[in-house]
Image (cartoon, rainbow, N blue to C red; front, top):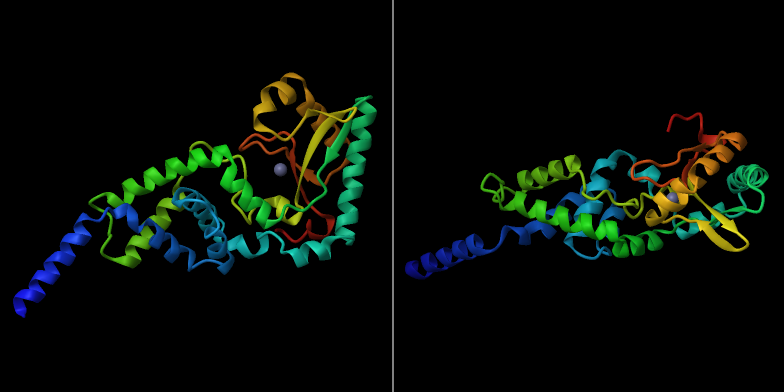
Length: 261
Ligand SMILES: [Zn+2]
């Protein structure tokens, strides 16, 4: 009986010693997300692979204090936005920019996607974007190294969770993902606008990273868009520079411009 217990204990110790520590990453992810807004856990479960989850969790940890106010609108919130004063004001600002752009660049037009970017769309982008895939692979490898290191407090769950959380909050992804983690895109509350340049129904400069050097910089559309934005409106901040997105401007509505958020 005693021999049997000892044997059992030894086998259990052996099993835990042999099991790769990286297998614990999913349980660490669960315990870190359990301390955040419940929408984080719901979203993480829809992201493909531990690497993509770690990369998104990094963003959630870093913006933990702003998650609630920043989180993308639900279907009901999007419906409430349709036809609202805020939507009309944004449309007016966009129209001003378009008018200024067309006046300065005859024959060309400026388009924006008027749709709020839903959480589902952001999850889909996160699961298919190339920059996210590459950065996810790297953060997964780096997190594996961390939890496999002799100093990692794997046998103390609270300390292990905090060690991974600290690692995530300080981590700099390589490459920098070109999109925000699902739920955190400013497009999810219509606080960002992507402009694109068209000519006779054809896209001359569109929201794609691969076209920045040619269409936006060499052809001068980044500079011409920015000139029109500056001339026509004070409500757009940008364009985004990290990562570079010359088409992406943050929108600051008049009603919340004074509340310090
Ligand atoms: Zn954008």
